Amino acid sequence: MNPLKKSRFILIKQLIHSPISLVIMFALVLRLWGIWHGYPFSYYGDEQHFVNRAVSFGSGDLNPHWFHKPAFLMYFLFFEYGIFFVIGKITGLFPTLDSFAISYFQDPWAFILIGRITVTLFGVSTIYVVYKIGEKFWSKNVGLYSSVFLALSYGHIFCGQDVKADVVATFFSVLSVFYILNIVNNDYKKRDFILAGLFAGLGAATKYYSIALLPCILIATIYGCVSKRNILIIKNYLYTLLCFWGIHFLASPYNFLDYHGRRAAFGRFINLFNKVSPLKIPGYAELEGTTNFLPENYQGNYIYNSFIHYVKIMLETEGVGIIIGIIFIISICFILFKPCIKKVLLLSFPILFSIISIVMCPSYTEARHQLIVYPFFAIAAGIFLCGIHGRLGNKFKINDLVLVLLIFPLVFIIKNNIYISKTDTRTLAKYWIESNIPANTRLILDEESPVLKMSKNNLEEYYKRSKTINPGQFTTHLEKYYSYQMKGEYEITYDIKEIRHIWWRDKEISDKDAYATTEYDKDMANPVKMVGVNDLEFYIKDGYKYVVTSSYAYASYMIQNKKSINFPSYKKFYEDLFSKGEIIKEFNAEQLRLPGPTIMIIKI
Image (cartoon, rainbow, N blue to C red; front, side, top):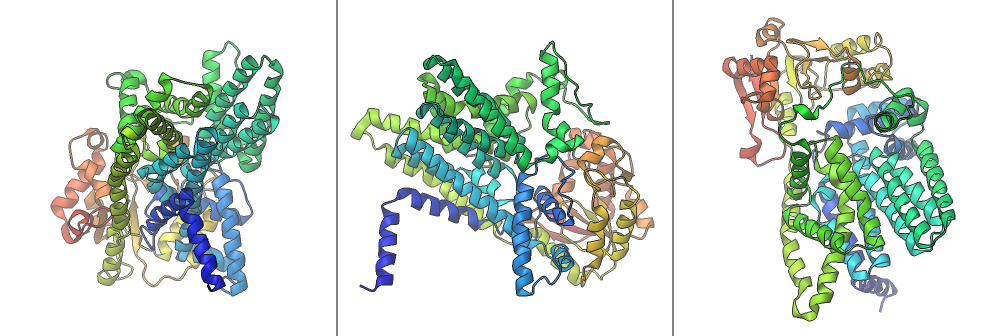
């Protein structure tokens, strides 16, 4: 046999005899399939935000100046973009750093794709770590079941196809739990305390969630002190704390060095400590204009409603789906009914994290917020199914039943990947606009609409205003941001007025265009751009010819609800727009069976 053919045959044989390799490859295909969604644009603002921050580090300022999320993923992307630049410089693609920056504003797709592939690889790596936890601390079959459940969890796939921190933080959190379990499995050695702390710290430097791992490591420490009757084990927990905070500082230093970073990272914990402790430490004042959640203003029992909402999100297709979700819930009950220290440590983090989420963010949960608990529930499901199989023996083919049940989520995942890989309605609308509406036409562009290039006059206006505003969360480096955009060469540009929606507030700020002025508003949005909306007649008098709007923007104002009542200016604008304007083109997402919102181009 030809040596090359022989080596291929050996490789295939090894893969067949290594089921986890097949699971990993299958999971990788399912995830990579959908990462091209939106091509050649990103229609997810949060994703663009991470990429923008990573690119901005090229200015030499490594302070992100925005601390809703820690900076480790941004730094990781910056490192990758640096490699991309070096390769481009060697090949002549990017002769200078300026040409590299300008290329980003002209066509950011390569940067977005690099980020999506990175997040995907972290997600697939998480599946492997889940397998190793199941295999090492229970059995190989537990590991395989667990890896399959996570591989087919909707939320873990779909949230991993965007540049966001959730999947990456989940990877480090699962690694940390691997070493937490190893603490009790390996006679409480210092090395395991150190590694548990390091990976928990990296998780917290990616998204603050992972700080909840510290109490879990403390549980393992206390159990060791009691079971071994050795109080000196507590000193190993000090190594955990040292490593946690040390790596957190190295991976996201400005959470410690910048006042805004310290407030974002520690403000809530300090305020909570001051509420429950007789000792008081200096806290951080709320941002001016912040709107706070008040339980007494929430309809009904807010804890109960929040819990129901949390479970509901998990069972929906954005979470893990009803089949895997029900298996997760049964498995958790099964484990809690007959606990042991390994099972307690396995579930301590997801249960603690879920309680914190339900109490602190009542009825505000998205699938990506829950993503960090799915791997642990998947392992619990593996333990449960292997336990059931052990009791039933060959009387009941549990493997066959699970495989049949998992066909349903698999079919949905494939259908969804096919769907999101189609051309987005916003992309179709962009090409139609550029083919049918002359360049430099004055038009109004709603949020969640096609990506159209602004005229240099528009950019110059933003550039001038950015020079008058003090550096802040959204304004640092904004001058450079707009100056690079003005250097770009674009075939078709428009004189654009943007409509921006105040999604972070319960009520509108003004009944017309206004600048964000409070600290809270400046923390949530770019204060260079106006928020709010004027009357339709105002825009007509100002020479605007068309409105490009999206169902993601207008739909919630067109029905009688809290939003339409609290944002009357938006409601009036859309009512006037649809009653007085002429729809010259519509891209109906439902009729076209394409991803994205319904886009309307309306002549006014």
